[in-house]
Image 1 (cartoon, rainbow, N blue to C red):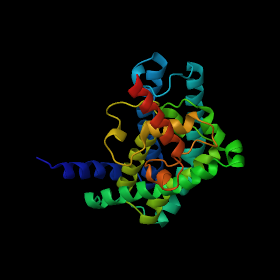
Image 2 (image 1 turned 60 degrees about the vertical axis):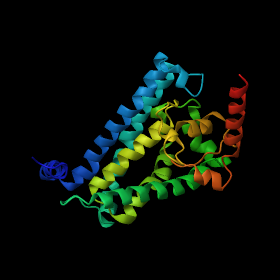
Image 3 (image 1 turned 90 degrees about the vertical axis):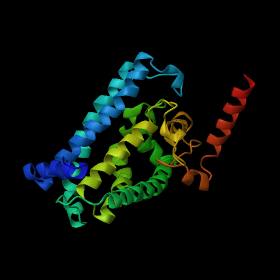
Length: 268
């Protein structure tokens, strides 16, 4: 019986035998992204639309169906007109940086160490880029598009001005560009990053939410606060973890708000 590794390598052999590396790194990558993004993002949209799991919803208010539909339609436009061309035109740069798709697949220790490195580096770069987007001019002309949804749901995670898509997208790709990863590692990183940002924007905090189990993980409750307060006081700028905001004091208002909520809960 084939081992899981040999089965995975057989599947990979099928891919590289039927598609060129360019096709895998561009079109197939785009399709994987779209599949993971919409399948993971649609549930919170439906929960909100039909009033499901209301007790786990962070904010009491909800978006209208028309407002949700507007988001979805614009996302499709942005993804096709911005994301896909960027993937296509950036392929030569990734190839120059060492991207490969050939067998053998990298050892799991290499995959895990690289993905962890990507998360830490992305979080650091994203924090400063996101914080810059909350300065007056950049917020007004660029980042305010993302904040049109003060009550976020999963799909709003990638709803942003095209300039922001490119600006903060750099934080996502700089790690892989530095290490020259195998395409398999790049796909895994992309999937995990999409799932993380969709969860952070879901608008729901469940008992099984990752932030209840993973140390330093921000999650939906942490990021939802960022969306629902005035942009000059929002804080919570990091994408995945909480330590950057803690180190630089940009989570103080959030911590105060949480303390008030806890005290009010005790007094009920």
